[in-house]
Image (cartoon, rainbow, N blue to C red; front, side, top):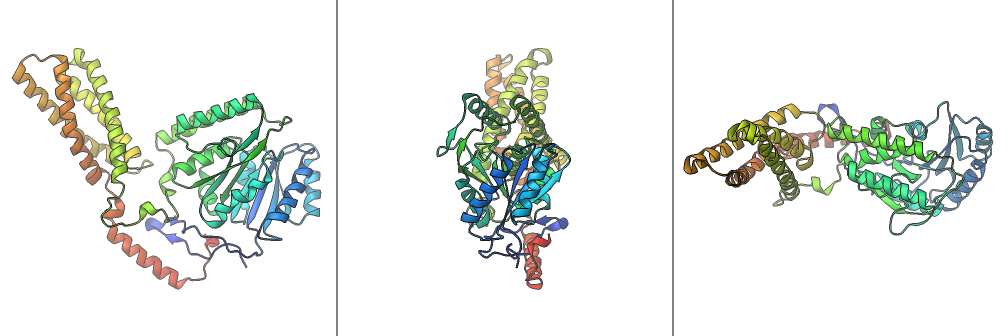
Amino acid sequence: MSSEPKHTPVVERHGRERLPVREHLPAWGGGVPVLDVVVPVYNEEADLESCVRRLHAHLARTFPYGQGGFRITVADNASSDRTPEIAARLAGELAEVRVHRLDQKGRGRALRAVWAGSDAPVLAYMDVDLSTDLNALLPLVAPLISGHSDLAIGSRLSRGSRVVRGTKREFISRTYNLILRGSLAARFSDAQCGFKAIRRDVAERLLPMVEDTGWFFDTELLVLAERAGLRIHEVPVDWVDDPDSTVHIARTAADDLKGVWRVGRALAVGALSLDRLARPFGDDPRDRQLEGVPRGLARQLVGFCVVGVLSTLFYLLLYSLSRLGLGAQLANAAALFVSALANTAANRRLTFGVRGRDRAVRHQAQGLVVFAIGLVLTSGSLAALDAAVGDPSHGTELTVLIAANLAATVLRFLLFRIWVFPDRRTTGEHEHEHELEYENHDHSQRPHESGAAR
């Protein structure tokens, strides 16, 4: 009997497949292990055997799914010492241990290869030095088994963590996480701790989107998951630094910064199709139809106001810089046009949550129509001011323009919300009901089909 929950994948329009609602894995064992723990290694002949035996003993004693409920996979990254020999011997002695040999180095490459081929519904990995206390392993995977979360990470920077390491590594770790927060708006606390887990159905969607094959792999995985609206559970850990670690800090840091730049640029230009991952399980309470509660209105108002303030400042700066060379009317038109493009792009992504390049040109064209309305209001205000005063001061012009922009802002938000970025779930309600009827019919016809057949 399979250890995975029985469910049928839901098919969206246009043939795209949406992941089912997260469910608690069955409480009984079966032929397929519930958990597959990967230990990536490269020339670790000194530590491999003690690590695997200690991990195996811990899981055999504490993992609640019993014998056969877990697997330990040694992912050998082209080791040139006795690591392959030791791994093979362990696999021969311990039924729950297997070996996956790669001919190229790279922690990310190893995780991708093993996770992509694993049949366990929960996938995890940990560093071979076992710097993280194994008592955190069950709290790490429990939220994934229960269906509460999509990914889980051990955090050395949480308030409840207890960490012993040198000042240099502490400084590097905290600096790196500050960079992630500042450049990629990451909200998870610790990207580099070698103690993570993910549900297999989530990994199937995320792994093809992750490019890195080295140490930046799991950071990229976390950033994409967070941007896609997936839930990341954090576990405070006890962690003791390994002074004999073979990680090259300077080279790893340089590679990580390159990865941050690459991912940040891809997110900025909408090159990642994260819309196909956004809330894929259909169990987000924000998706529920609640009578009398406008969906997302408060959040959209806050986002629109922030973008509006920034774009107004940007507009005024452009106007002030071009006023002397172009004159008031041309300077206003040019500044408003440039700021309108930036405003539409920012509202598209930050306020209304539209990702990817789909309909981007159409949205900008509609934004230019909104821009034309703003141009009429502001240009008309300038013309009226000039007719009334004759030669107004620069400060007076700015005051009138601010007032005109405030009036145009209210209209701009309404047009954005109703016309440019309408809520498709509301406008397509009838189609959605038809899809639900199809899905319910499909479920009744195939009650025993497993989600593993995706």
